[in-house]
Every structure is written in structure tokens, then in C-alpha cells.
Length: 212
Image 1: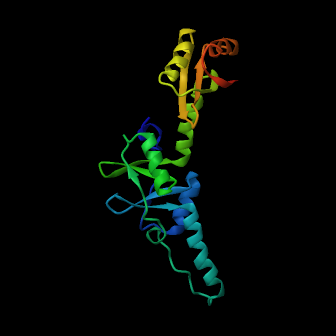
Image 2: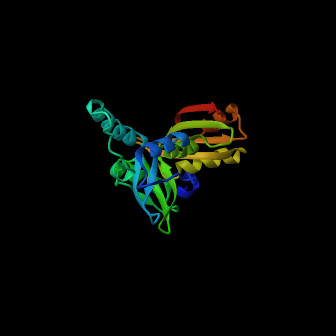
Image 3: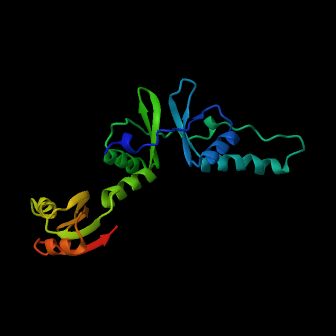
């Protein structure tokens, strides 16, 4: 899975010279929490969020409350509000690498850049969507979760047994634990009874089966 498969391609951007008020209105109209900021050449120079815009706009309003009539609050532009801590990634970066970058830099989004131009954005919400797809897949079927000993070939044993019985694996994930391995998969074309009979012959326990 690559960033280009899950990024938002209809990218909404903001100019660094844009005024804060219209920029906030744009984010709200588009239902966005953040947007990349571009300079005059179209290069990514920052990231601005609705929260930062709201906070910045609230300060001059409070300060002007006690000012004389006719004293207008200073005009705020995105350049003075945006964060310059923006992490860019190429569209062919694996999703797990992108997720690691988000965690390491403690950011909620990455701007996708190709040939020097912003072509998309990938967010923590997209990462959650990928995790769900890995666990439950798109197609209907039976989700099976189990614990297994961590010996070489156990994952192949489980999937092969289900496949031989006519099952179609539509999603698969595994995680190494202190003791053994946690396996979760979704299989189509088998019912609960079929799966229960198959896993009884495998060295697994704590089996949970759910139709989703």
C-alpha cells in the first residue's frame, strides 16, 4: 500500500499572502481541518489549521475591544500564522513509512509532493482507514481473530487450511506478542461452522469469529 493509493488528490491550498479570515472561511466551506500553504512559485512553505487561524483571529478582536473608535485590528495573513514544520513525502512512499514519519514528528498530516508540486495530502484519518481495511477488508465475510504460537510457517498453515477448504482471504494482519502471535483475517465463502472445524485442527486458541 502506497501513499498515492489513499491520499486526498483534490488538494485545497492556501496562499501565504492570503488573509486569515478568508482562509478560515475556505477551510470551513471545504470541511477541512488543515491545508498546505504555497508561496508565489507554488512550493509548499507551511501548513495552516483552522485552530491556529481561530486563535490568531481571536487575539486582535480581544485587544481591539478597549481601543478607540476607528482603530481597526491589524490585518493577519497566513504567513504569520502557519506552521513551517511541514513534512513532505513522495506519492510512492509505503503507507507504513508515512505512518512512522507522522509518529516520529508528532504531526497529523503529510503533504505529498511530486516534481516540486503539492499533489495531495495524507492524514491520520487516512492512516486509520488503512488499518481498518487491513483488518476487515471491503468485501463481506467472516472476520477471524486468534492467537497462535510464533513458529515459522504458522501464518501459512492458517491461510492454507482456510484456502484448501474453499475460503477466500480478503484481508490479513498479524502482530508478534511477547508470547506467540495475534492473527486477524477476513475470509469469504466459508460459514462459521466451516471455520470452527478448520481452526480446531490448528495449533491456535482464543478464536473469535464475527460476520461483518
